[in-house]
Length: 395
Image 1 (cartoon, rainbow, N blue to C red):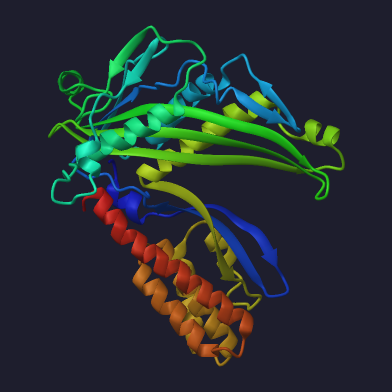
Image 2: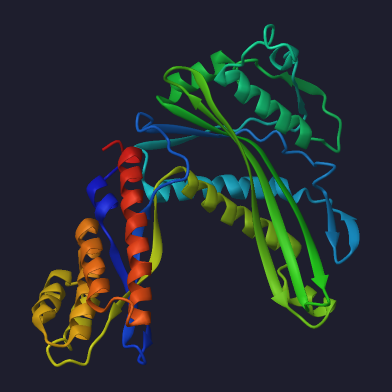
């Protein structure tokens, strides 16, 4: 990861004066911060291989069915297969954009158009009622069981398969030889395999609410393989719902306002890909921050300095007002100093300033008290996130 310190502690001002509330004399700015991923991938995995391994590439007799304003229909274009490639390509793009891994290699896809999967593993010993004879499952066996159950339950092809792939009892859709070959050819530490992608959708109109709705549910399964120690680390199945809603007076109007079906499916695939990428790597997100503006003659320059991201200079302006006889000015400058410290990467100092700001006025000024409590919560969350980010970066 290039410039890890900057990635961890840096914040970037994007837009200043996104909104202005003259009644309370506050303004907001848009900034970018780094958020940790939901899943933590060990820092030892620096070189990643990714493979399109979708067993659901041929038309699915269940997912090809959809409802459109109360009518059951069957598609012919196999849209979720097209969407699966859109999903995969956008996932690769989103991961590359964050530059978290040292290398990311896409390997040739495997084609399951004529291949069905068969699980011959005997799971009965693992589920015996008698604990004395019940066999404990290893992590790899749990992953194979979860993967196999999901894939077989959700893969029902319209056309019969002429070939078959027997699920490996330890590695699922791969053999040890295939994984070793990937390791040898790519020098990758970790393999991410997209084992399944399926999209279910519908278009609905609710006359009582005068609302049109078009949800798309993307069902995915990813397998994570440790190519260093040759282990099946994780079978991860996740649905992701993307929904369009439009207020409309009639069904025909809803039909006009909602996106065309295939557009919704393909756009949803892009969104789900971005969502999953953000769930496995730390990523930049845009957030808003508030600060107090002032017409005070000595503080009028603050807005200009903020626009230029000159946080140390503007902090000096605010610091000079801490001895002001007007406690409102003192409290608001303390709050603003919290923002300046956050922008400089010192979250502990930022939190201390906002706590001080709160105690200057206490609960007497309800709006200021609420602003302080909300910012304290945000900063506390960021402190916890920073600890997690340090683990994810291996620092």
